[in-house]
Length: 414
Image (cartoon, rainbow, N blue to C red; front, side, top):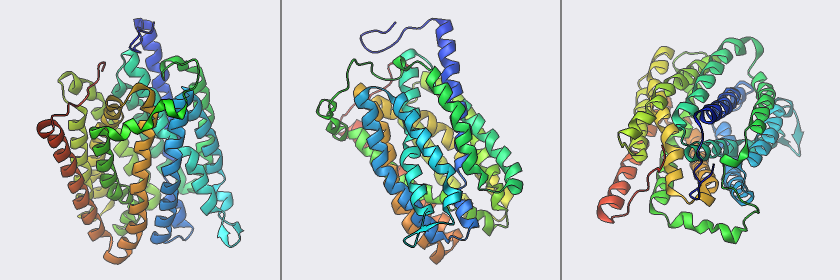
């Protein structure tokens, strides 16, 4: 039963069913997405330089700037995140499967790879923000715990990363492009089986763009300052992860084994997602969790600059796993608390769009910097910039709350 304020009252049996529906969605989505993390390894393997890979990453991010808010606005406009999500993930994964075929084809002197990859990203990148929005809106309206649902995604992601580390040396990295599309098929079936009424604001008709009043988002002090923080943090962080295969190579590791690091990170997200609920019961605000995550991320990059072997890289990646769990559990919920009901999908995807701006800047500058100053100095610089981002976020929160007396919205239901 849905109340006037948008919350839904469910029986214990209904809650259990909804919990496993959304847990299954997270599980299979992130199981599939684990196969998409080998683009840098693939491009490196077919002869692309760091600066060329940086340019491709920048092109992907440029596409994301426009794609993410477009898809979010469409979801809010038609009142269904689910429909837009399914469309995006199907088209994006189909195009992704064509990447290996495109690598040997040129059109007017331009490799078809440079066209197919950004085209796939146009649809695939918004999917992560959309699935986050779909699940966060639903579970908060229905009184479920997002952290204990999202942790199934981390479990499945870790499992797939370990599988890939074992099989890719035999199959070849190009198989990850085909695997994504094959895994998307059952995920779409799971998505279709989940009733849409609890995921978004239920409406009899679409809203016009004028009725949405998107400009409200950019008058929200905490939302805007969070976006600025996200840009500053993600400029170095995205490139730090993009060029991780070069760090693995620098310490004498096998880049095909990078799945061990990503899988280990995902495993460590799980305990942090478990404690999101207890932290909320103790009234720990989402912004405090985000600051904690930023500290872990900063420590990861600074420690990477000291690593001398692959084992140390794995151990250091503990920091990202702990920070990632906090960030996953807090970021989407923090944005949810700051925005009006009819703009929640737009707010999440605009966040994805501004972090794409960071990825463009980071990818273009990062590849060139890495070639000029070397891998060790590069990761040290990345860590220092991320520390500055954390300080900026803390200062804006202090000014908003203590100086300008602007209250921070909190969840009504956890």
